[in-house]
Length: 147
Image 1 (cartoon, one colour):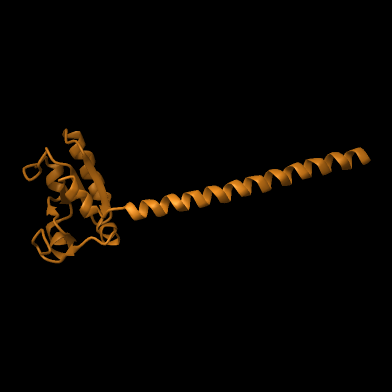
Image 2 (cartoon, rainbow, N blue to C red):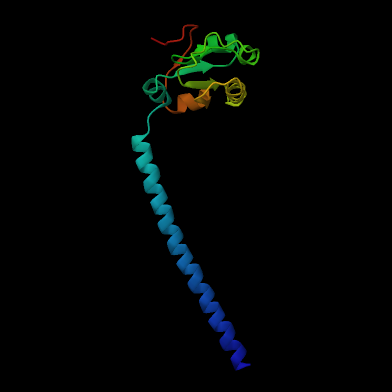
């Protein structure tokens, strides 16, 4: 019986040691992750800056009525339906393509269609809400630029 109690005690102590060691490493890992995120946030650029730096084109794939209500600054409107019908006349294939819509769903569909058509460097940047969260301008006119 004594032997059983000793074995159980040793196992429990080993278990407690593992848990304590694991928590200490977890806390360190969390601290390291927080520092990495902080550094990334300091170096983060807005989507509009990224597009400008890459000489990209921002394409809003929503319907014209949605675009006229509000759209990302400098976005041109090419509805998803036009892209699915293979109307690429307004797209410059030599420049990176950034797609935006309301939530990211239609931009995702457009990305797939454009890549299947042979376009390279196509990126779905999500929805207009994501654009605004980054602090990028939103226009409420039919003109592509807010200025």
